[in-house]
Length: 140
Image (cartoon, rainbow, N blue to C red):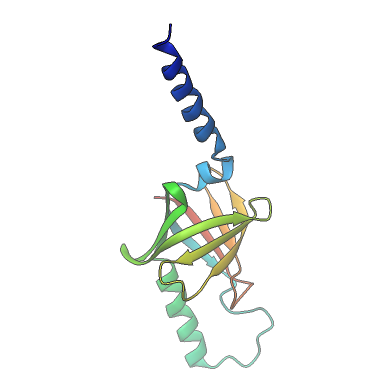
């Protein structure tokens, strides 16, 4: 009987820590590919030059090669064309409605509003520079 007690304690501890991962973290933990970008140019923007329009289209095409991989232990990778450009840690705030990404370099912190998160869809809105941008992701 004494041999079973340590096994029971180990099982309890492992069960406790695995249950601590909330639903949002579980749904988020995978590789996500950007499939749609909305509102890259802010609405009611008047007087866009042809160069501005071309630049916006180039940025949009680049964003469509974006993928995010959210890993265990609250780590993430961001890649363009499957080349990792940023790695760091993430956290969830505001009842799991705000995703905060801090790169290893810690030179900037990006905040995104989680508009939708299911097993088949992730929609992020806003960041420090343009709160209108909406990024739609599907699992890889």
